[in-house]
Length: 324
Ligand code: ADP
Image (cartoon, rainbow, N blue to C red; front, side):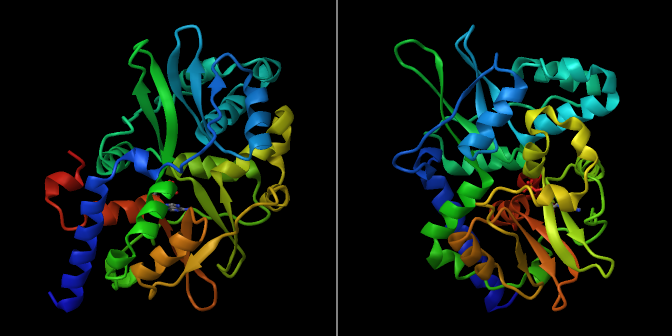
């Protein structure tokens, strides 16, 4: 191994140490707002609330039992869509579903309920990251217990995006040591990519996301050039107001409905180095990077989980890589 390997390991170790001495609480901004939804709310209404607040997920609260009841995410809406596809005659019912029926929907369509992992805000951030990688959760609720009442309290939710941003902003001295190019690290996925075209239907793309268990599908033209990206969160405006029949619309039509504040898509090249990717994360709202060649042709995709996995686990014991 050369000096580049040595530097790279030094950078990785620095970041890992940082994650061990910081807590999930440290990631939270000084002041923030948390939208918590009552489990008894109609699913239809929850969609409007998410859209109005410009958010894509929220913790659920069971007010009967005064307990945290899981996290509402775009996966839940995709499940409702699958339910609609399997039981189209139920459409009148779907309109009346409450958030508390999401578990029944999972059962009806035969998907395994997602494990609701949570972490205590004062535990090391490293632990939250490991949990995320192990369970494939993209976001984890921070749950504390009220000393007086003994009740659970949802403090906030941290995402892979927030954590990587926190790393990028606070560890420039370490991330600048990560000089190996993406190609050499094998960072991301390059084979068997799920893609769609502007003319594909939204439903086709949703089925792809379910089949591959992924949260975004690159939209390409006939020459494999990247035009856009359809993300799981793009599903939310599509079914606003219970317009399930509009899922047969094309990707092109759906993407034109994106909110104004949409941050755009980020691309990189296989020769880009990890330090440059961290610079992008530091400066922008990146949720994944599409790897393209000089002609903008699709080569691969790097998810935030790919980056987090590399940063935490590369070069660790085999045991660790399996997430034990
Ligand atoms: P995250 O877990 O960060 O939200 P994804 O669910 O999109 O990311 O990605 C999970 C895994 O699938 C990653 O290893 C990623 O490289 C890969 N992946 C992401 N998008 C695609 C795609 N369109 N086709 C094939 N593989 C993908």
